[in-house]
Length: 480
Image (tube, rainbow, N blue to C red; front, top):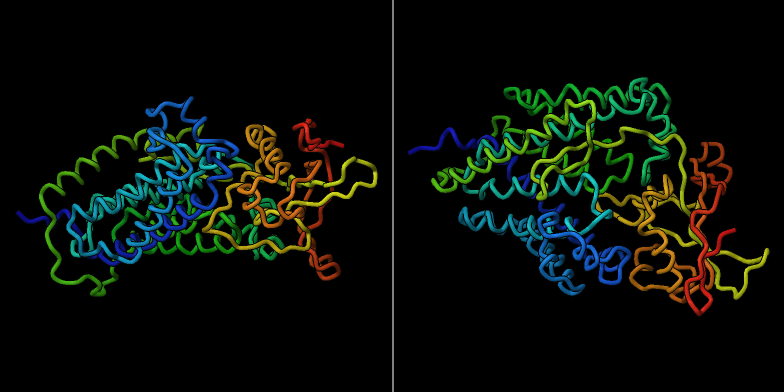
């Protein structure tokens, strides 16, 4: 029995490119987890996994760490994910049997699923679900000596459609500035973590900002429908999405969201008539065909609520309707903040507070701090604490579970926490008092930049932490 209807060799090269890019993002995701987990969700972290699994059952958060947790075991899981993903980047399973290829791709998916489902607020963003959903589909794409299965290629198109169209619809239903084309007057300055070019993007002429928004609307609301058209229309649509995602990479730091969207878009490109695929390609085994068709049917059933969400007036963005993140909703920045606020944390090692007390600022790696420091490029690497600090400045409701514990860790000079920062002004020694203040930040004008050499202008607004005595040693959170 032939399976000509089931596979399409015209997507052999794009399948391979997608797999390599996905595996590289897996490597980065596991490195982020390995480097940051102790301070954030470790046994003595800000939101410890052991406390989480005691109150949340396995059925609501499936994870290996529901069965057992220790910091050492988490490190083993994270570094195992790095190693397995690196073998996939190198193509070591390209010539493996189908079953071995499936297992190799299933391993990082299971490991990362286990991390996300206990990661709590630190792992609550759309790029986590996007990695898990695309990672699940990759399990069934097959090895390099077989043409990719058409049902999985269509599911990747469906995923890309939801990412782009969902983002477009949440904008049109959200802030009015998306409809009057003025959102980018503010967004490059107020986005969670500006990049090294964000200052320049912010100072583009306003008519160009409006063109940017129009291009975004076209790419997210019109172009996605062409993904399901015959070639070359689908490839042209994917290329437009790749270009716009590259623009977003240049203008800010959004973890691996843009990079992974580019990878998924690559899977929509055919061979453009070029002889990329080796010959001959083997036929897929019957058991594999059955599994792919069953998985496809299951994912189509699970797509009902995400599809309905796209057309709902109460659209939810970045939400998983199933515990395994198999089919999700996507979208971001339905509302745009017009003014940038930042929480700045300072401490002193003086024994008593006086009007002359000298405060020293903790510098974070990615979020704005010192006005003289140019924003850095971090994406696709993700600084989880820096990202959440932006939300802490928006509202205390986003940080009530972890900002106070963060202050306590800094007062104790917790080593794991200090590793998340760019600069500890006390060089590992505990300060005596700590305070957090809310600042208003804005980019300097070109004239101010030439005169001062600074990238930001800031002014203090209000305290951002409650006062509290933290121990017999006298260390305390101070509020003016």
